[in-house]
Length: 185
View (cartoon, rainbow, N blue to C red):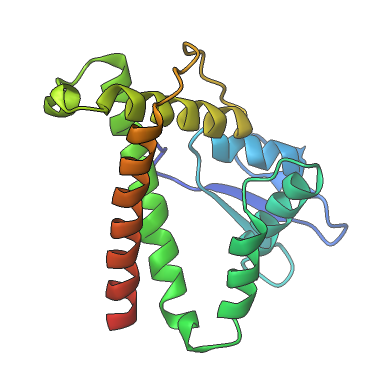
């Protein structure tokens, strides 16, 4: 998703109304969420004080989506985030989250390219690859539909029990490796 180079400036007036400085009209939180989904970076400032309110409004947008039942963040993640404010992990968490989302964006692009067949995949000959690809496709479809972008794909085939067990073992090993790296930080 390409981003425009300039941030979209949103001004908050004393009346708490939000004003799009680019189009000279008032906007809502849903409008701002739409700008972000379209790839725009936004900056929300208080017109009177000049304070940057971007973080506050982005958190409010997330809270409203979660409150409407559009749950992307599992309770465990939310709980861990609250805990991170109270301990030494606070210094590591922002960088970890930023890197994780960057990896998710990169992986999403690569997965979509692989599913579309635009990149030759040497792993295609690996046993169990088709089941893993079906799982990825189902996951990506669920993620995209929860973000409002819905991707039309074929119904994934159910993986065999052996493939699932092998994949779970691989995932557990990778998770243990990541935990060891985090502990080293």
